[in-house]
Length: 195
Image (cartoon, rainbow, N blue to C red; front, side, top):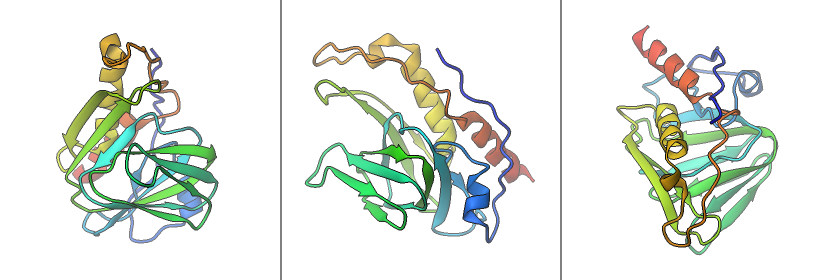
């Protein structure tokens, strides 16, 4: 099993920031909240070079904005199945919608989300038959999204049965966590709350 990258996080929450300077300090799907905790909506930033390894369901609506690079937002179901993103594009994600971000060209991405986001859920669907294989939910007001992502992936990787489709029997490889540093981001956010 691959280990999560444990790089030190040097970004801080503030009232204003230089997007590209701050993005250079971030990694794939860090979703680091950039604004002071009392601001609503919150603005998170990531510097993505790989695909999101799961589908994400946010209880509340969010908006994804592409600042540089190219990406594709894929929806598991619904009348619109994907949006291609280039710099300057925004995609509205209704609350309760399973979506996944595929990185077509490395770049920086913003997500606008509620200051009190409610629950978040990570879901894996079978690549072979699209049947749901595994899910993990948490309250994002009590546990950071990054801690939730890390816990979900560790649990998913830890048990082969969670990576095996009960519908068609296809077994998926474990999630390669080498590009993600969610525990370090979660620790940095927890430390900033204590300061």
